[in-house]
Length: 398
Image 1 (cartoon, rainbow, N blue to C red):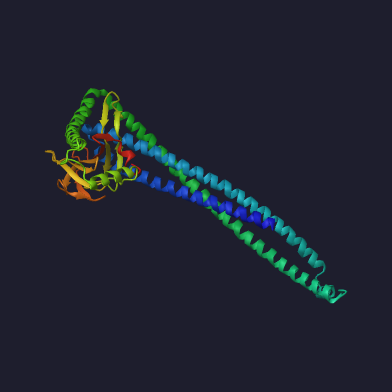
Image 2 (cartoon, one colour):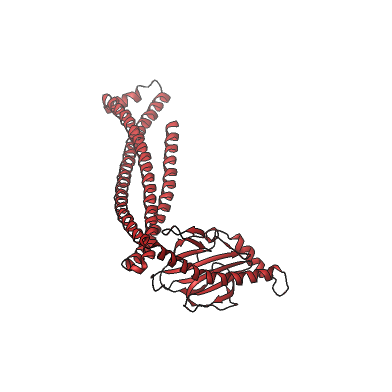
């Protein structure tokens, strides 16, 4: 009884561990696929403009981001390798346990067969039963003989079952070793590519540093252009917030708007992305430029790189508060969610108008591609009572 209980515990232990490993492996594989997809997207931009001298700054930014993604991919594969190594270790323990058990069962069975061989004649079996002193003893001997036959059959079945389990474990081990080898090869390829791109990055940076002042001015000009529209947005939101905070009847939030504001806050960290596919290439806050370290970037939101003609959607129920139309064809939409605002910039087409009531994930416009860089980027921001907040705190896995 104890032996079967221990075997059950061992079986449950391996099943439990297997389910945990499978789940973790699945998560890692999903993350790996996403990183690979992001790398492919960045590669398309790099190879489109790598030979354009005037796009040197954009090239090195894309390349730097790709290098980071590849490093993430290497880390992901290393984590998968660690899991497989642990799985192999556990499978080896399972295999050794099964082999030890099989050895004991075979030994017991061999001893039983040898003993049976010595008393193999049917006459001996019959004599064993009929030589009993009375009927009850004869009946007991008959039952004992039946149990002996059943025990022998059970031993044969257990040997066969154990052999099947050993074969399954060996097969699983072979598959895991093959997976491990494939991951090692994949890792080696990525590292070789990474070495080449690190060298390419160094060469481009050297080229930029020859004329760092000019590139610094390029960054500042772009920053200035971005700040101009940011100031317009901030002014509009500040006015709306001031009117609401003054509690004047005509500007007071309706009960519906209050409810939207409450629900927006309750969904912090769970809100959907403003695009269905994208890659964050610039995070929120003040930060040094990744290449020209002497220049600082102020980001009031995030920049999401996505595909050409990507449609943009509202992250939550709300109302179109304002639309800013730009001469260069890069427009912005402001959506109010009670005390909160979400802002979507770089739209080439707008599908909504001021005052429209929107539902979560309702499309609001389409993004345009930057003609010089070839990039399609959404500039996305969130405001709370007139102040910017980090979108990564609000959007799910941003």
